Image (cartoon, rainbow, N blue to C red; front, side):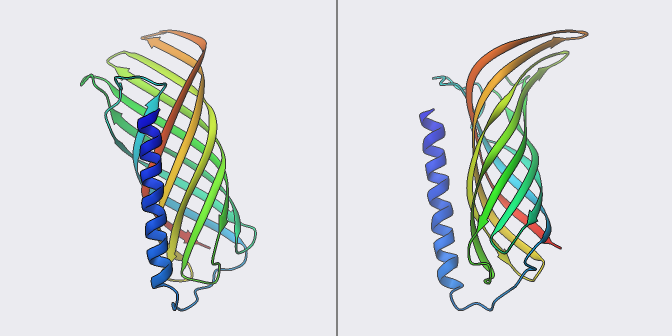
Length: 207
């Protein structure tokens, strides 16, 4: 997965660079305070990079796009738990076949600078994943679990509304496969490694 690793590193370095720039520009910013605890909702527009196993000739095109919805709860100004549900569509090397990636995350989020408009964060947790390819009446799907790591920032324009940038990397172990043709289907156990990296623009509203 050399390409996946290189893309993850590049995305992480870009994120860190943007965080540092905004941190410097926000050093004298006016404080913007959230309530110490409460619910927040988020919407994320993502670019997605998808890899399965270590194939020299990738089946998936370079990038896809998708959307993610987040539901979180702040226990205090720095720590939150977050549930994320999202998906992305990818083209493949076969023009008649499309691929659909779906994910469900449970994350712990640690946020820095709780009394400033600019708030970087780190996150980590677990996820469930499904990757499906379709052509006419036939489809194939693999699913499994994995580990999620990520970083990013939110900039609060008011007490409630924020925008930001997020980088998330999913390390996946696919353990179940299913092939369907019309009314017929076949399931089997598999053992495949995969990865998905998303880089996107986030919008959130804190209650």
